[in-house]
Length: 212
Ligand SMILES: CC(C)(COP(=O)(O)OP(=O)(O)OC[C@H]1O[C@@H](n2cnc3c(N)ncnc32)[C@H](O)[C@@H]1OP(=O)(O)O)[C@@H](O)C(=O)NCCC(=O)NCCS
Image (cartoon, rainbow, N blue to C red; front, side, top):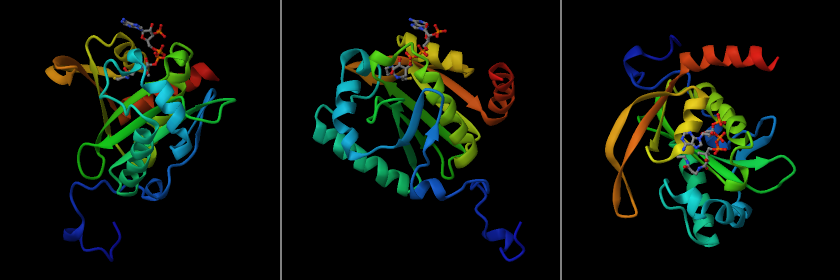
């Protein structure tokens, strides 16, 4: 600890590993199939096309229904990022210029020690490997750049692809949150999936060995 900082001034819940640079602007993260970057206003039309279809929106909070709505959402994501509460990455497939999906991470406690993430990708890209490629980048970012130690995700039990994707990624299902998500006037049960930073690091070693 810096001797110049009196011990009693350091906030107990604030991890010292949190870095502030992502709050200025999100980094560009490069995978083998996708690039992740900050959302831009010009992503609004493609996000509307990709995320407002019935199959994508079925088990997530209702996305905006107009280009203007997505433009307002994009402005909001940048404001929340600057405030250090939240990060939202655009998923850009190789050979494309606009977003085909988003990955969001928000803090569940001050300092981001526990965070929640969520994701949605246009259905034309389901089953292509884009999810896994992007998800690994985002989880690395949460545990590395942000300093999260516990990453939570909630998936409606009926959401086969959402649960399957989290299981495949190595997340642990901790329990069922009964009637925790209101969608189309009906309360749905959700599974709570978590990844801890230490589990992720050991799993990453295995993946690294497989890839190399
Ligand atoms: C969630 C999402 C990003 C995952 O991307 P994806 O490309 O569909 O995911 P993947 O195909 O890589 O992985 C899904 C896995 O679930 C499996 N799966 C599909 N339907 C399933 C079902 N009904 N039950 C169990 N597993 C199922 C798939 O077979 C696949 O596993 P595999 O690769 O071992 O075969 C994408 O489906 C999406 O955007 N869905 C709409 C938004 C959403 O629901 N977001 C998640 C909120 S938690």
